[in-house]
Image 1 (cartoon, rainbow, N blue to C red):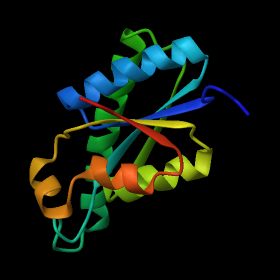
Image 2 (image 1 turned 90 degrees about the vertical axis):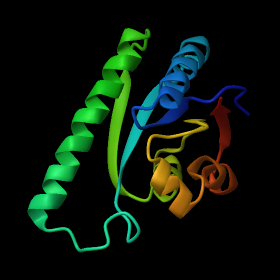
Image 3 (image 1 turned 180 degrees about the vertical axis):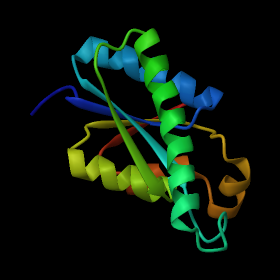
Length: 143
């Protein structure tokens, strides 16, 4: 049995809570020699996008989220992360976080307690709570 995770994943969104989660995860990765994975989920749901997105709209949304993810990777590197694996997914935040954690065998998920998408959080439920409930591994919620 391994005492420490070998892969730590942070769900990021550009918020202050996300920044704190990155800081904690970078420190944990340094202490445990774990891989750092950052995941940004571009929110697409019937509640936030009631009309079907055209290919052009979807492409633009994906590009915007890729730019945000690139900024998050730079924050992690500026905070001392030696190697960062970036992941971009489109869909519901809680679903995509849990799905990727299962796919890559994450040992610890790190999430902020409040995200950027406050309206979506009210409509869809609190992402952190859903992630804690459904995650295949331990979850650290950074306040």
